[in-house]
Length: 235
Image (cartoon, rainbow, N blue to C red; front, side, top):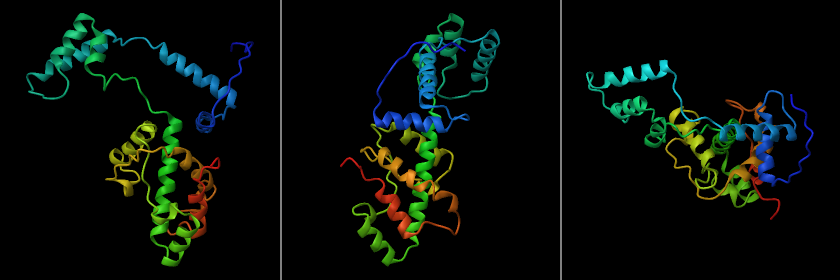
C-alpha cells in the first residue's frame, strides 16, 4: 500500500456528499468518506486509462466462426457479420466501437445508484398501496397535513434530463426485470428534479421498513411524516 503523504483539501456540495455516502454504505467494509473518495477517484482514473478494445486469438477465431454461420443459416439481425469480419481481419477494432456504440459504450450502472432507486421504488410501492386502503377520513387528514403532496399520492418518476441514470435503472427494473410492477406502463419522466426530495423521504421510511410487509402497511401518520420529508429545508 502506498503511503498517503500528500495533503489535498476539497469542498463538496451536499448532493455530491450524499452520493458519496450512498456509495459508502453499499461497500462491505463501510469506508470513511475520505477513503471512499480515494477509491472513487482511483476507479475514475482507471476508467480513463482503459485500453482500447482487444481480442485474444481465441476470441477472434470464435467471433469469425460465428460470422460464418450467418449466411448459410439465413440469420438476420442488427449485427453485420461481413463488417465484423473485415474489422477483425484488418485490425480495425476501433471501427466496431464506432459502428456499434450501443454495445461498446463502456457504461455500467453505479451500484449505489441502483441501491438508491430500489429504495425509492420500494418506498413508493408501500406509499401507494397503503394509501389506497385508507378511509376517506384518513385521506382527507393526509391531504390537509401534507399540502400539496397528499392530494394524489402517486410515484411520478425521475427527471430524464438531470436524473437520467435513475430513470433508466427504474425502467429496467420495472419493464425488463418485472420488479415493482405496479409502476409498469408509466412514463416516469417528470422533467423536474426529484431525487433530493426522495432521499429525504427514504431517510424517514428506512426505520419503518423492517416492520412492513403483506397485511402490515403504512398508517396515515407514517405517510404524513414520509411525504412531508420531501420539503426543502432551505426554503
